[in-house]
Amino acid sequence: MYSDIRQIFEAGLHAYLTQFLARVFELGNLVARTYLMLPVA
Image (tube, rainbow, N blue to C red; front, side):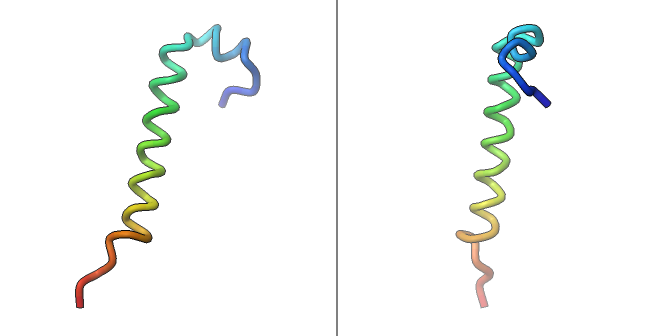
């Protein structure tokens, strides 16, 4: 998506950081669902 810092600043740093945080949040959810929320037998 962003290959260098100029693209980030052209799109807007706030927009980039907001998108980055959303992606990290989703990654954390995937890790939690995969490894921490084990099914109850």
